[in-house]
Image 1 (cartoon, rainbow, N blue to C red):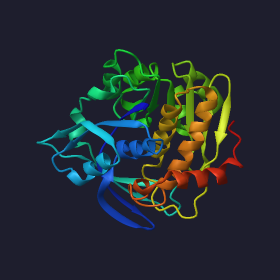
Image 2: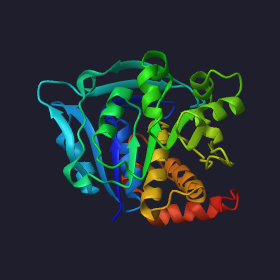
Image 3: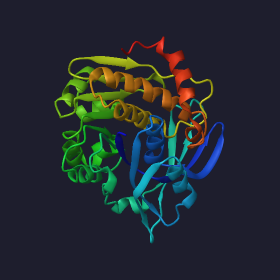
Image 4: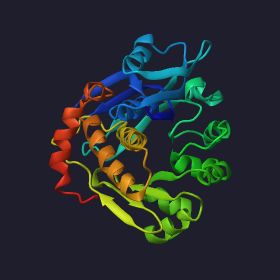
Length: 304
């Protein structure tokens, strides 16, 4: 069975949307991405850190989905990462109300013993120093490395960010970050410049409007899957990334055509994520559900 490692956060989230509020539920990039990857029945491990306040039931949820948590470090004298946010009525914007980094500040990641040679490595949105640390531990580079990052790291740790960008196969950023990272005045020029930094592929995310996959030879747009009622968008981007990379690991094919299909698959997985708070929808997702949604979607997207 193909193997995938997700390096990311495990956190408490307090979230308010027009449809309700939940407090201190399981969040962070790692659980969303790993549950999404597991929909393709791959071996998946999480590399992360939590404090002594993180419930065993949250970790047991991951174990029940056959996700390896052997390198989820538990800091006995620390508190877990915490994020609180409130979404606007149209769900396209949110306000961060509080962020507590806590144990994440001193995170020193380690590769799980049974995952020394994974097919795919997902580098969730973390300090580039942490991302560089995990990549340096591999004797042989994973077949495919995906990087998720954000404007905060561009503002504060650009040198290390540029180093990790040079080592990955795909970078996933939004349209505003393309402009900031490249220093260019428009997206076309920005994409071309970022492709010279190391990655073979770029995914430019545009939220509810979908995402575009770029390489130096092609461009592919995938619209979002329309949902009647979006309850909570938190974790949608991580579910998208995990679904994509789970697909690539399962087919052991990283050609441009395969990545296009993976982009569509990730889009469908993410569409389930937004239908409920936290992991409530993701923990119940079935292959048959995805198959039905795929049949509805494929007529709108030519991805062969």
